[in-house]
Length: 336
Ligand SMILES: NC(=O)c1ccc[n+]([C@@H]2O[C@H](COP(=O)([O-])OP(=O)(O)OC[C@H]3O[C@@H](n4cnc5c(N)ncnc54)[C@H](O)[C@@H]3O)[C@@H](O)[C@H]2O)c1
Image (cartoon, rainbow, N blue to C red; front, side, top):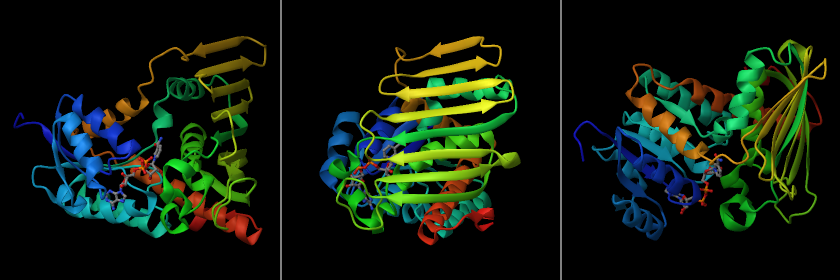
């Protein structure tokens, strides 16, 4: 390994950790140093395939002196303790969504990263979908004018309930489809249209047999910047999947369509002029590009902190939505 390369640890070698480890091996200034998983056989398999070390103790991987940056790709409730261990040891952190399952933990993670001037990036790979990136550019260039309202949905058929047993344990997952899929749509809504001020919502169990606090559908109403109304649904009974969002503005409307294999964004002006961008056939690179953005940020003079703050805000909004659903009220100011 070259002396100048950044040593990277991946903690959690399931579906996401494997992706992060693979992406690290193609980053020009990083080196996959070590992987770990409480199921050591998973870490060993990744290490063998990618040519790095595997250690059974996740904390030993984080504390390894050769490691400068850590991907935390473990179940939701373990994000905060593992990330805090890494930040307190002076390591940059990439943490899968949701940043944490409690607001207090998310705030502590951001405080640690800020005070130590370390990167804290939260996984939000939908931002790296080509059609979503294009939508961001179109909104910024005024393609729909001043945004008036938005509505959308995100979800899938609930496959995580089968493949990731921890997702049926309320203490580990911290919620249902809103905690699982909600971070992505909330992050995109905030990224495109700004922050959210008031929320109300309702939880539903429509199909899956789950503990009471794990919903398989959630309906949310938000009030965004300038009083912008926003509606969205998160679902684990969405057979087609995965994401659809439309927004109407003073000059036209835009649809981001990631249903099934589609990767489209369409803008229709008030004059009916249509611009359509189709990325459906492009190779899907969102996980790799996201991991590379994090690894690149570590070498830049300013740490990647905005993403961690966005991740924290999303946890605040999700917890406000759960509170609103439980109490049957509208929650304002979201705990600021
Ligand atoms: N698009 C996305 O950004 C996206 C998609 C799916 C999942 N996720 C998030 O990624 C995280 C992991 O999801 P996944 O699908 O990879 O789950 P997974 O179940 O496939 O993998 C999790 C791995 O972590 C290991 N593990 C559990 N506790 C650990 C600990 N304390 N230390 C080390 N390893 C531990 C498990 O043995 C398992 O191998 C979750 O928080 C999930 O919400 C993000």
